[in-house]
Image: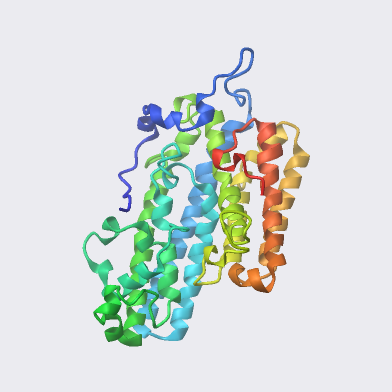
Length: 400
């Protein structure tokens, strides 16, 4: 069952929940005699870097995503009204603009958009908006065919793989035929065939618009959760010992953990697994590639890298890069940002979908994997050491 987000909690309430603080290992670390419990206690940069995350990085990224979703709603409505192939193409372009904006947000899973199982204040809203790698193309076609999204409470009563950005992708790029087996109701009872190509296109357009509208509602919740007049997660992150993280070290480690999306998802799940380097028993696993219907797998990785760069640098304000400079590690910052930019260049140099490139030009996928790995090796090596931050358990033993 899909999780539904409740009303935004103030960080003061969250601070009272001992479980929230316990969720972050840094917050619970007992320093040896003579060492500070919070290694950032005397840092002039740490408080300003934490203050920058919400208003300077996450909220603007969410606003860009919201604007793209609004444009997608309009494009889907135009396609539904005309049924024209050109309008479907325009809706696909609008979908990618929204997807690109969200892919930049993927390495920013903090607070409410993060997992409720692992993050302080997590409300699982990321999965509500984009559930990959949990996807179900047949379920999307089933909903398209039977108009199920029109039922009251559809989004609250269904699993996250029935909607979201990945659902919109299947609705927009799906063919006149559906991908479900013959025993599924839309095929067994003739519902799909009865619609005909024009009816199917109209249903695909209408469901795309409904999913985009639902995602906009969730995005509004996220923006409100980060704003001072709402849940004020921006204030929670920067509140030091008085906040839900219990100190700047734990709050910075939460930001650090979010950046590891580039390691555990971008490098490992989006590249190493399709390449057969992990979690794949074959020489390659092209079926595990992201964005299969649209072929946007490389562009999604480029967007992940740009989002990583935004959070790492704090955009126009202080970021983790400034913490490194404060400790005299200017060269490390230069090296890491150069590695990020080089990886973006590799991702953007070729638009061949990764699943196709695995057989046609495997070396290009390996080169992209290695370029991303150059970034994450610095992150979990020198950056973690210099700043005495804890590497997430999921990434700690990763050597590929």
